[in-house]
Length: 71
Picture 1 (tube, rainbow, N blue to C red):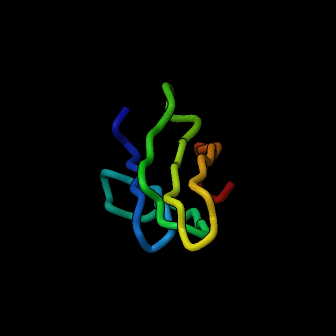
Picture 2: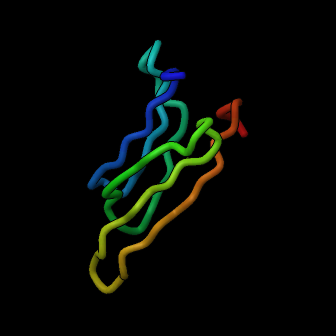
C-alpha cells in the first residue's frame, strides 16, 4: 500500500519509515552492513541481507513487521 518504506545501510541498520510523514518508525541493528531489503507480499514480513563483514559470513534475516511500530 506504499505507506511504509524499508531501507538498508552500510551503518549496519535497516530502517522502517512512514512514507507520508518521513518519520522513522523502527531501526533494526545488525553486526554487518545491510545490503538489500524487501517486503513480503502484504508487508507483514521483511527480508534483509547483510554483507560478509570482518570474519562474519553473509546472512539473511526475516523480520515480522507489526502494524503498530511499538510492537
